[in-house]
Length: 434
Image 1 (spheres, rainbow, N blue to C red):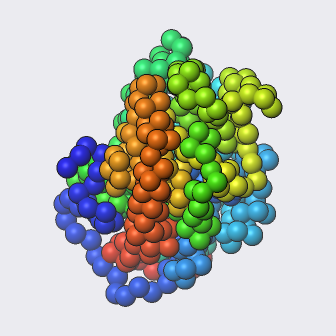
Image 2 (cartoon, rainbow, N blue to C red; image 1 turned 135 degrees about the vertical axis):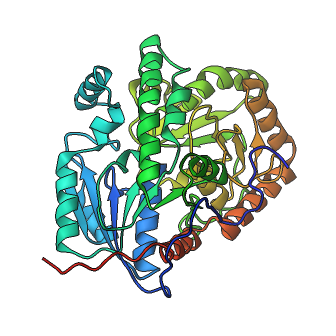
C-alpha cells in the first residue's frame, strides 16, 4: 500500500452514528442546488464539478433540478439556463469566479476586525437567504444541496440538506499560510483559524456530507460523527476523447488550471522559476504552455513571446486542442485540497502526467503505472527525461490512465451514485402549499 492511494477504486461511503430513514425506490426528486457562483462556463475544477453533477442529475437521472446561485455583475445567467435548466440568480458585487477585486479586498479588511471569517462575509449573503426561504415556502423540494462548506451556513428548515464539501478549505488556508508575503501568510493563518470552526459547523448542520476522496471523508466523519459519502471528481470521456501520442513531443509541456486560484498560480510560478531553468540545461527544446482563466499579472509576465519557451495562453475557448498537442501534462502543485480534475482530463485525453503527490491526492493512482511523481525541480527533470528515453513508458502511462478514468471516474456513474445516496435521506414532511 502506498500513501496516496485508496484501499480500492470503488466509490464508497464513511458512516458514523445512527442510520437514516430510507426512501422506497429510485423515484424522481426535486432538487435545489445552491452554488457560490454560476456553474457555467465550466472553466475551473469547481465549476466543472457543479456543472457536471447538475447536468447529469437532470438529464441522465431524471430529477428536476433548480440551481440557486450567487452571480457576479458579468456572469451569464442565460448561458446557465441553456445548459442546466432553471436558474435563480442572486446578484452580488463579486464571486469566487471573478479575479481579485476591490470588493473582495474590502471584505478581507472587514473580516480582519471581526470574529467572523472572510469566507463568512463573502459567501453568506442575506439576499440569497431570503431567496432560499422564498423558494422553500413556495415549492416542495426533496432536498437542498449546498456546494462548498462556505455555503453551508444557510438555513433550510424542514428539508434534508446535503453539503458537498469538495475540499477541506481551512486545510488549504493553513497550507497557504506558509507561502507568499508576510502579510499574505498572516491573513491566511488568521482566516484558517476562523474558518475552521465555521467549516466544521457547516459539516455538523448537514443531513449528509459529500467528500471527493476517502481521506477527506474520514476527516469529516471523525469531526461530526455523521454520514459522509465519497463522490469523487470525474471526467466526461466522450468530451475529452483519447488522442494518439504519435506525433507529439514529450518536451511540449502543458499546465491546465484556473489561474485565479492561487495554488494553481503558485504552481506555475514554481515550475517556471525553479524547474524550467534546469530543464533548459538538461533537455534542449523543452517548452511550457499554461492554459487557464484569469492569469494574474505575475503569471502573464512569464510569457517569453513568440520565440520563447514559456507561453501563457490564459483563457481558451476549448482546452482539448491543447491537450491533443501537448506531449506531457505537468501538475506541480504544492498547495491545495480535494482532487484535481486536470489529471482526470489528461488521463481521458491519453496524455502522460508528471505530478506532485499532493497534486494527485485522493486519486487511485500509482507512481509508474498511471503517472510519474516528482516533488523537487530535479525530480521533474528526471521524470521528463525518463519519458523521453522510454517511448513505451509514455504509451503505458497513457493506456493505464485512460483505463482508470473509464472504469472509475466517469461523471455519469458518479452522478448515478450521488442519486442513489439521495434515496437514503429522510423524506421531508409535506406541508400544504402556500
